[in-house]
Amino acid sequence: MTAPRISTSMYILPTLALAKRLLGCTLVTVVAGQRTAGRIVETEAYHGDTDAACHCYYRRTPRNEVMFAAAGTFYVYQIYGLHYCVNLVSERENTGAAVLIRALEPIDGLETMYLRRPVKRPTELTSGPARLCQALAIERSMSGEHTQHSSRIWVETAAPIPDSEVVTTTRIGISKATELPWRFYLAGSTFVSKGPAGMPGRKTKERAFRS
DNA sequence: GGATCGATCGGCT
DNA sequence: GCCGATCGATCCG
Image (cartoon, rainbow, N blue to C red):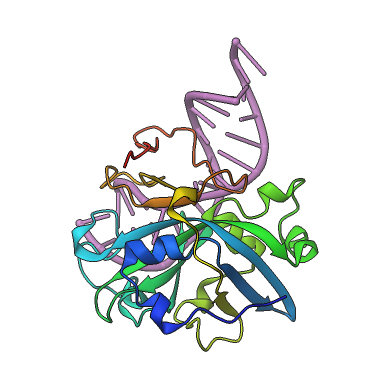
């Protein structure tokens, strides 16, 4: 079962709208002939020079260059020297904004995912930005690929999730701009990441955002 | 269950 | 030199 890839009209949405709209859609990779896919259940928005937590906040550099590419481009970066995280670039070219994909519900290729991540429960497979990259074999060489054209990574569309099923909170694991309610997840999903319990010197606690 | 800590390295504040 | 959009192991209760 596959669905069409997301269309231009979707990934040109403003970053916050795109972050919400990606919920329910399917992130797919095909690596070494193995298709692995998961339903997106958690995202975060990062937006250019207005957002101190964004990689593009200070200026354009070789590292964040891909975030200034066309909307629909994947931006993959390495964090803490050993993990990867994947984003979908948003907004007009040269803006420097993206949506971080933080958690998936595994759908296809579970056996392959377990080979890449020897864990016990399906909830441990893809419930975190670095975990899902390991399970779907996403690494830095995929940075710069486009969801419309890539043969190894793309997003497939799904019906929009009603607002009543989307929870909005502050973002996780950052130390700047912690007040922005730019994290979104599917209410009731057991595949959402919880984030670190608490690390010294870091404000990681999420705050529910009332609306 | 919750808190603490180490791994590991590229890019820059 | 410092530190991060993280994870998993370990210790405590």
